Image (cartoon, rainbow, N blue to C red; front, side, top):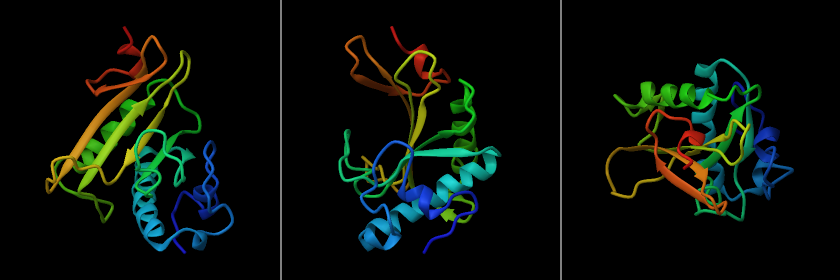
Amino acid sequence: MPQWKHFTVNEVLNPYFDDNPAKNSWDEMPEIIQSRLEKTMNLVDAIREEYGRPLQLNSTYRLHDRNGRAHREGHAVDFQPVEAGLNYGFRIIEIIENCLENTNIFYNIIVDHVRVFWEWKKQGSAGWIHLDTNYNPNNSSKFIEYLVGYPDKSGNMVYAPFEDKAPWEYVK
């Protein structure tokens, strides 16, 4: 059974928004999912340590993935600060950049492939961070990508490279 400094297994099994199919026990998940999700949560726990404030898990492992397979395979976690100011995403991205840009080891966690989205859907919302620890489109030895997600005029999510702007600043 995994242990984290800032999160309980119950929080991982019962995130705020999405249903984890293994609500009652870590062992209800396939072993490969347990291994992947534990690695991803180790990184989220380290980010929480650096951030210094509580984080809420919005989505972890789930059977139905709306935009790909990262959650379904146990590689992705969505989270946000419990008391989020609108610009918290800048600090989270800065933490990840500072720790991973020059090395692939973050709190003794080997991280080779990371994709970070700061996603946002509605005015007045601070959005959330989507952290994927397995995205590697180029089969490179190290891949780190930072994106923002925001709705277009039809309400469909659009993704763009992070350029030191909050997601709502990309809306045209």
